[in-house]
Every structure is written in structure tokens, then in C-alpha cells.
Image (tube, rainbow, N blue to C red):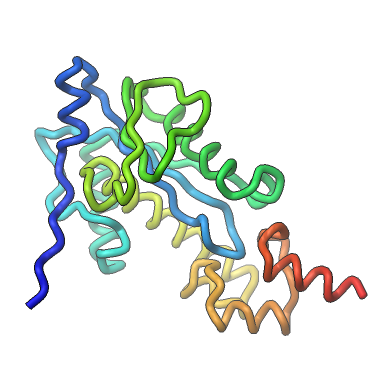
Amino acid sequence: MTSRRPAPDQTFEAAFHARGLLRVAGIDEVGRGPLAGPVVAAAVVLDFARVPAGLADSKALTAARRAALTLEIAAQADVSIAEASVAEIDRLNIRGATHLAMRRALDGLPGGAVAAVIDGRDIPAGWPCPAEAVVKGDARCLSVAAASIVAKEYRDALMRRLAEAHPGYGWERNAGYPTAEHRAALQHLGVTPHHRRSFGPVRNMLLKNAF
């Protein structure tokens, strides 16, 4: 019998609240691994008097549950979503572009934030407020879990729209990740403007076609 994964809680936010820092943003990103599309980050400041039930790592939720929770989060919390473009990913590398999207999400928060819990191993350089980086934060921290849900819902919807303009790559199913379907389409259909040219499979395809 397998043990159930512990649910995220507000331990990390409470530590900042104890220091008098009451508007704590959870920050998460989605889209580091795909071959196509932007990287997306979200920042969420929860109202702990009315936290939507069932917040969890977005990857552990069904698509229908993510969609429903996204609407609840938008109605009950302050939310900001931001992107770093394919061009910025290719120029800065994926880590730098991810940090840029995170900072844009923080800067776009209605009412701002005075502290942040950031999913991952490090805090972006020049971060403007006290912050804690938490590995697997989306599974451990309620605010980060909320950010992971809205970021994934936003990016998945974006990739479905891009799939309508660029059929054949399966982006409506794979969100730009390097599935067998996507890799085969690269071979047959070539590289689109939405592909990350600095990523190996895309770069190799461009080099192959140059000769």
C-alpha cells in the first residue's frame, strides 16, 4: 500500500507572516523543457481566509480540475502571469529566461508583494524582496501550488492556439514538449518561428538543413 503524498500547506508563507511580511507571493514557472513556445511564470498572493480547496502541484491534477481551480484562484487571489519569449530563451538561455518571466510576474501583481516563495533551487539575481527558493515548492507550498496551476493552464491554452496556426506538431496534446510525435513532425514539417533554436533537436535540424 502506497502512502499518500502530503498536501501543500502554508508553512513557508507563515514564516514570512511572522516577520510582518504579509503579502507573500508564490512563484512558479511552466515550460522549461519544451522545444517550442514561451516559458511562462505566475505569481499568486493567496487570501488565506478563502483558499480554494484542493490546491496541489499542477502535474498531479486532471485538466478539468486545473481549469476549475484556475477560475477559483483568479476570483479569490491576486494573480499575475508573464512570459519570456522564444527569442529571449534563445538569447538568455532557459534559466535566464525563466528568471525573467518570474520577475515580470512579480512586477505585474496587483498590489505587489513584500516577500516570495519561489519554486526551484535559486532566487533570481536582483530579486527585489525577501524570498525563499523551495525545491518542489509546487508540492509543498500553497501559494506556489496555486501559481503552478494558473501558469500551466495559461501555457497549455496558449499552445493550443499556436497549434491551430501550426498543425501537425501535436502542440494541442504535447504543449511543445519533445514527444515522439513532435520530433517526427520536426523532421517532416521543419522548424517554425515558435521553435527554440538554441535547443538541441531544433538546432540540429537547422544545421542539417543548412547543408
